[in-house]
Length: 187
Image 1 (cartoon, one colour):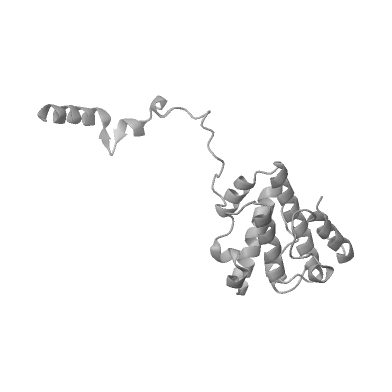
Image 2 (cartoon, helix red, strand yellow):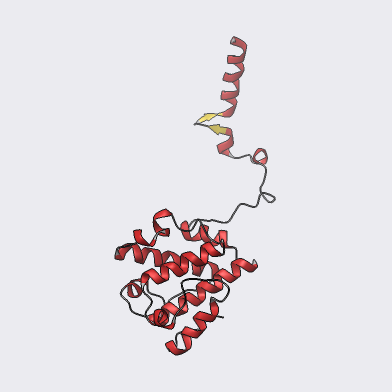
């Protein structure tokens, strides 16, 4: 379970425990978790996703390469995307995690809380309790209805009798049918 804000002496061991079995490198050293640099966070995220074969389509080629995520804006955008993905997985807001402050080297407590939530999302994806592909879709297309259509409940297209079905391009379908019949007689 993800802890809430607290002192780093409590949060760091909880963050390390959250990643047991999810990440082999980078090592979650106390020193790095006390003031996590962006490169470290990028490596934790990308290695966790790649190592567990989860959400591989969340980031494009540029975002996946830490050397190309070099300016402040790109770093903040990366962290915002990870936070949105994590929230979409867990269903909880990460209001203690502020990417702009993290990039500035501040708020290690919020960063540790975020990392614990991220690890929880990964575990949920691995055990099947969290629909990772749906969370990726919600992250990449926020505000869209990204639920996959349930084709079993869909009404067959030919069963719908709407004005749009009868009027094609502003011309009544019966007129079009007559025109097509006449065209067939001419051929």
